[in-house]
Amino acid sequence: MARLPARPFRDRQPGHEDRLPADAPGDRCRPRADGVAHDGAGLFMADATEIATYVDAGTLLPLDEYVEKYDLKSKVFPWALGLGFMDGHYYSIPHEFEATMMVFNKSLLDANGWKVPRTREEFVAVCDAAMAGGLICIAQGSAGNILVQQFAFEKYLTNYAGPKAVRDLFKGAVTFSSPDIKGAFELLKSDWDKGYWNDRQSPAVTIAQARSLWLEQRALFLAEGTFTQRFIDSSPVAFEWGATSWPSMRDGVPSASGIAIGAVMAVSKYTKHADVAGALMGYMYERKDLMLEGVGKGLQPRATPFAISDVPGDMAPSTRTMLTALLDVTKDPDNVGYAPWTFFPTKTNQYLMETLDTLFYDEIGLDDFLAAAQKVLDAELADGYEFGAP
Image 1 (cartoon, helix red, strand yellow):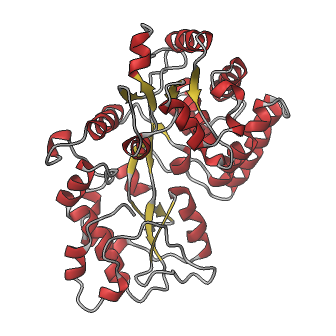
Image 2 (cartoon, one colour; image 1 turned 30 degrees about the vertical axis):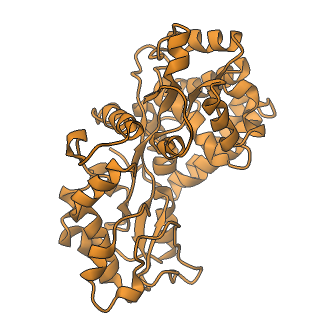
Image 3 (cartoon, one colour; image 1 turned 60 degrees about the vertical axis):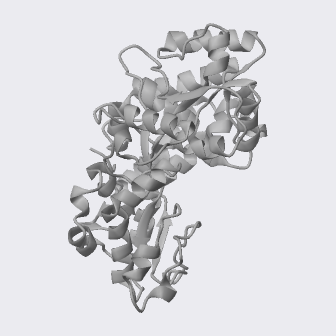
């Protein structure tokens, strides 16, 4: 968990001090195979899409009591809280709130007379001009980390197919071969072939190396998210930068970002300290003042409404830039996309991540790639998968 100031909470839990760290742990404590969590309170963190696996295994504690006791329905975004509602119970509580982004080098754009692209035509013009001038359009590196692949296909599904088409796909109303979904992957493959994505070298480049290309002003864009602020804050950035949603990839589909929960909190059903774990989750949303203090220092916000004016003290410019971008791209709930690591069915998303490079390098054709993805999705739908968003 992000470094939540936990001392005030610990002081309210006499007799349980040995069960709670001075600050929340930095790693994600998960249950062992026998279902017993490694941490004393039984509280652990996971990706939202992983919770269904634990529910199916019968290792999680229903959290309905704590959702009601700490009035989380009034404090947490409904779509975020709903991610943990399965089989009639709440099994997880959202932690960090984030969104996918186009992070851009404003200084390079301005120096060349280029605008931040908002349309497909502007995007193509900027990428072509950048490559003609010896620049990389999009710095992207997936070597040793296939999770990065999500940054690529999410941008096109959100901004070419559109959020409604993505909802329909994962609700079984349309298939991967439908024009909107197929068209998104066709366009991604076309842009890859043009060299827009790291000059077709992404699988040979790590995410750290790709970020260095951007930092060295050899690339215009990073296709990442609000979480990229952590890298920026720890790096010597010698230029003006900004962040916004990915541009629209076709007429009629507005520019949008994929919303996400960086992680969710869940509790092992074997814990002897469920009330302590439940109280800690409630405390995270009860003490909004502490959350806002952390946000002002660069931490990701909880999944709860807030405004820039709510954040106390003087924020670093990078923090203000990214927070402003986050609130801007999520201000219209009818125009947000869905980040794969939060919303996509687990096995389908895994297939897309693992197989995307074979599509890029023509080891598999687009139709076969999509047919195989549909086969995986059909199995997950038949097994009871439900898309966790309205």
